[in-house]
Image (cartoon, rainbow, N blue to C red; front, side, top):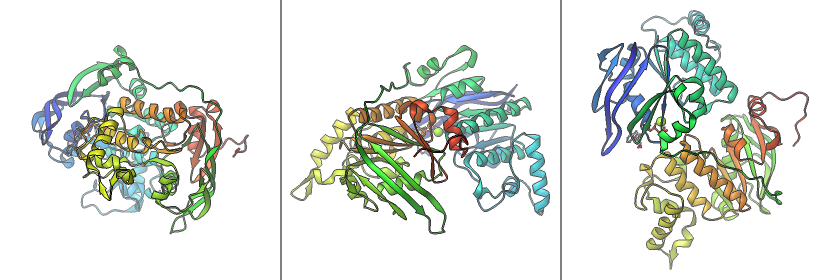
Length: 502
Ligand SMILES: Nc1ncnc2c1ncn2[C@@H]1O[C@H](COP(=O)(O)OP(=O)(O)OP(=O)(O)O)[C@@H](O)[C@H]1O
Ligand SMILES: [Mg+2]
């Protein structure tokens, strides 16, 4: 019994074919993975199913009957729910209000009744939420549960989850998988998108792979392997970077002392952060996003002034300095939001020259030829899929990230701050970025890696610090860290036996 059949779906954006005659189906009670590189067309296919895009060609069947879905409202009416990374909750309202909002038409809203009804739904679907909590106070994992419950409350029979685990700590991923397994037993069907192959192998029955907008195939978990899936996705087999043991780290290159940041509303975002980053080491700051990392990154970039504390980069006090001064002192940065690191309307070549415009001035005039040649070299070295003239805004996420990295690394900075450098990147691009960071460490640069991805943190770091609610919970050599230990610290659980050593 098929709950969803998408047949021969084609979706174009101008000249680009994002989905090229794709067939995809979903059986009742299965978790079906959708895999593929960045830009393969996964989200487009799901937005089409959810009524956010309309396909140029093809047909959709629900319970084996043809349907026309032209809006999310249609999709919801047909029993389809979608949970994305960008939550659609209203933060000043309570969990119960959010869940019931829009689902009750014309019925007056009695807070006690909706709270009771949401508590019932929470029990029925085994999705723990506190109906009376205000959404603003929830963690990312809790928000996601509210989104799931919201869809189920609207009687979703099919749940589309677009990279749900990208924002969760390992314990939350386990909890999500447990819930999903229970829900499919109750008859729910799930479409699950992830870049993490081991997750797909753990939870999904069938796996469909897209590449370059085309369907590569659908396989059963029992008849495939992570290797084969990687090969289907990108056309080659081996993945993963090899990290050689570090040499003894050199002297400190970046010292952060008693850094504090208090927001205008009095909320303390950073509480007394002290860290020393050494030459030739990768020091990671692991943590669930929203625990002060953005503020730390902004302060180290010169975009935000600390309330207290001191930052020294290679002997130069850069506390409260401008981005240009911090750059000049030897800091290379890849920002958290890669789109913020580039100017979309400018060309790849112009973006690559942005941080060192002085180098291209010839008697006060920009040397266009030199900019272009420099860009051509970096495009080759970093395998950026673009030409120097292309506007950066048109590139895929992975290629934009390569532009940002090429620009900052080509200046051989002493200290590199990489914030969530592989978030949302596919396996190939991720591997590439991680290799580059290791190369920089091996060349003697100090690398501060801010990441929520524990595989990344464990795979690359020499030392690992965990940040939670603006505080460094603990800092340890990577050899002493485990996923479980880090996950607990990231969730704010401090090992009572041990006092933090920093
Ligand atoms: N609204 C849009 N307008 C123009 N092009 C788009 C639009 N949405 C997606 N695209 C393009 O369609 C292609 C497929 O994008 P899509 O977002 O579906 O990929 P994806 O498989 O979800 O990738 P990722 O893993 O990075 O999320 C990409 O080349 C993308 O640039
Ligand atoms: Mg996507």
